[in-house]
Image (cartoon, rainbow, N blue to C red; front, top):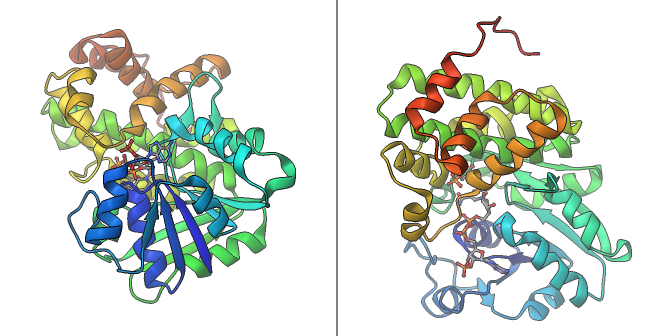
Length: 333
Ligand SMILES: NC(=O)C1=CN([C@@H]2O[C@H](COP(=O)(O)OP(=O)(O)OC[C@H]3O[C@@H](n4cnc5c(N)ncnc54)[C@H](OP(=O)(O)O)[C@@H]3O)[C@@H](O)[C@H]2O)C=CC1
Ligand SMILES: O=C(CO)COP(=O)(O)O
């Protein structure tokens, strides 16, 4: 099959290698001239300094990427997603399948990527939508380490096709799901919880506290998944708990590392100045804070992060706020 990857950063370029390993023809589109050159001339991953397949080709031309195939893998940060989709909508001339691999929720609108795609792309050019997500640090997939993902779509046939396209017998096994909402939401909320887990680690609160945050974070994932109309069971699968486990305590996670730096006293401005790569969790915290207000959801861990990051509340004060809430039963409601 032919596929076009839109965004050649850590994840997009890694998926490029996976798809070439699986025997597909791939083009990567990225706005970053240096990334495109690195992929085409040095055959090196732009972030990891590891070899990429010689047949993996990158371009700075969106029209070339759109003309190449009918399958668009959306691998850009969610903050540029709407703008990019508008450009795509103005350039496409044939229907496309959209496969989102980014993880986030749009602040202000509280929209998931599937909703943004549906809103922006003219219906006659929308062949189908799927999300491919789960616990998958690019740092490991690029080294062909064993990884399980889930592909979800309202169209069962599309999910099944993509399951075959992305799976292989050596390091990648893909499951299907019919719960598009649950899968999309899990990936976004776990990033927010990973930031808080990093904060606790940066503050040297200990492993008990981190386990507590991760476990109570699962409750917040469940609440958000259900608030969007997703299934509770999805929150406990690869795209929820699975992705939370891999993100919320890993030095490979940009979200966890950003949280750690906040815990150690850095401001977001300092962190952004030092980190080239996408930190989705901070934007998710803003979006989820707004969602909690709109829908009356109880998301205390995410609220703590919001106070610290967006209202400059000292982290220790935010934690006291969390601990002095009314005592209650552990059950998920
Ligand atoms: N890294 C990982 O392990 C995983 C990441 N993801 C998700 O994938 C998404 C992308 O993450 P990741 O690859 O890590 O991020 P990176 O920051 O590594 O890469 C993003 C890439 O998109 C490019 N880009 C930005 N704006 C545009 C645009 N308008 N058109 C085309 N390309 C653009 C960036 O270029 P420039 O640098 O010039 O801005 C950069 O090359 C995120 O939502 C993330 O949560 C999901 C699973 C795993
Ligand atoms: O989504 C990821 C792993 O599944 C990557 O997480 P980070 O963006 O925190 O690095």
